[in-house]
Structures are given as structure tokens and as C-alpha cells.
Amino acid sequence: MNDFDTYRKQRGYSDKTIKTQNYGINRFKSWCVTQSINLEKITYNEALQFIDGERQRGVANPSIVNEINSIRLYFDYLQESGSIGQNIIKRIKIRQSGKKVLPETLTVQQLENIYQNFVNLPEWEHINQRTDRLHKRNIVILGLLVYQGITSGEIAKLETTHINLMEGKVYVPASRKGNARTLKLQANQILPMKSYIEEFNPNPYLFPTQKQSDMICNIIRRVKKQNPEVIDNRQIRASVIMNWLKSNNIRQVQYMTGHKNIKSTEQYRNQDLTDLSKQLELFHPLK
Image (tube, rainbow, N blue to C red; front, side):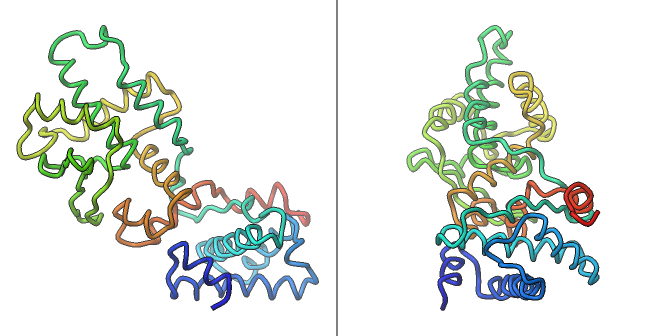
């Protein structure tokens, strides 16, 4: 096994995925040889020429995206091993036609601020006992969104027995779209969750309501008043996942997100991808 294989295995890539990645990397290496380009000194515009060549060969955009992802990983390895100074492949932005573009990422600190701002809403925001009680519930829900990246559908399925305050963990049951998993709660989630359960005594569901979507929308609407950078709960989940990818290997993140297919996790590596034709129009030296 070579060092690059080891590098990838340590990051959770399977033998099958590595084999697929090698195809795209070897295509790129061969192209560099035919163009008399030193791979380790390739420029951004030269890399765009490779992509243009693939398109002219009739390679579909999704396949080009996979090739670029593999090449980007190879350049990450070269950079970390000291063979190159910077990874210019990270600058290449492609969007697969028909794919949804993920919203702007919120940093870990931004997510933390969103939660704390919501927790610390002034008392005059809670005009009566009912709104005060609902705010306590909403704090718990927002915590699950910004720290565990749980979906609104999963929140609807949570039961009181899924919360283990002694161990500081939450069990997320399996669904049609996601696998079951157990996630760690943050320290600042424990007390609000304990207070909520003791006061509301929910049974069996943790958040009993017939209008789960309305409940989440109302929380996000209030959050946006304090934090205009917030778009929706989908953005929050995407941000949590992308932040996880910075400090965990892809297999760990696949488990934490509940993704049944690792490709669902891999798409979050590419959240900054934009339309290839626009990139070529702006930067391609032959245009």
C-alpha cells in the first residue's frame, strides 16, 4: 500500500472508493504528461483546460465533479506531504446540473452565537406564561438543530426515552431516509433539556404536536430576527455537517448525520461548487 492509499484509508475511504478515485487522478496525470505540464506546478487556468478537455470528450458533469474531487484530495495529500505549496484545485468550482446548491456555511462560532442569542432573549419577549413555556421548549429544539444537526423529521420522532441526561446523549431513531445513531449532547444543552422534561413531562414523544413543520418554522423565524445570516433549518444542518467534516473522517460524519449512503456525506465537501461554464467564461485563457 502506498502512502496516498494510507492517507485515504485513515480518512475513512473504502477500497472501492479509492479505486474510483484513482481513475480520475490517473486521467489527470496522463493529461498533464500529454500537455507537457508539471503536475506539481500546474496553474489554475491549466487545470481549467483539463476540465474543458473532459467536456469536449463528452464526459458528463457529474463524472467531472467526481474527477475533480479525487484530484483535490490528491493535492491535499501532496500539500500535507510538502510536495506542493498550495492546492489550486480547491479554487475550481463546479456545480452538477440539477443538483441543489447548499447555502452559505455558518461557522461553529456563528452556530454557537445563534443558540446563545436565542437562549438569552429578553424576558419581555415572553409576554405570558404560555410563551415562556414554549420558549423553553424551543431552546431545546434549537440546540438539537445547531449542535446535533438533527432534521425536523427526526425531531418529530424523538421520544423522551431517547434522551439520556446522565450520559449526556441523545438517540436518534432510524427513519426511511436516515440511519439510527447516538450523539453526544453539549454541556449547555443538559440543563435546558432537564428543565423542559421535568416541566412539560412529555410522553411518549419529546415534542408532542401535530404541526412539527410549523413549530420549526416559527423557531427559525424568531432566530432570523436576531441573526439575519440564517436562512432556514436546512442551512443549519448543512453547516453542522460541513463543520464536522473539518475535524472528523468521512465515515464518522456519515454515522453522525445518519446518511445511508456515503455519497450523501461527500456532497457536503462540495458545498462551494458553482457553475462550470461561468468559471470557464471568466477565467479560461482560450475564451
